[in-house]
Image (cartoon, rainbow, N blue to C red; front, side, top):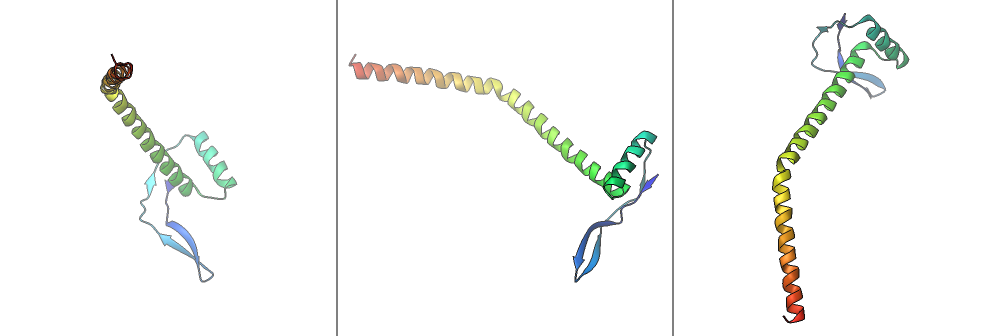
Length: 110
């Protein structure tokens, strides 16, 4: 099965439809029969075509994959920083305790 996308966008200029070409490459893919039937049904209901469906599905997949990779990187960074942040919080807590003790001593005149 071949999918070929000729155009990137459709716009109206002076009452006429204008198609903007995009750089495309024809590819051949193999799909299970049941998956193709499901895609064809959806494409028909949306009055679209296979190429557009595959193009949008690939864009969505790549976008979601990038989001997932960013989340994983952030999670790893937070885990790596956990001990450092705990030490900083502990030091700040000790400093606050000392400051509170000093303040109480100064206020009480001891």
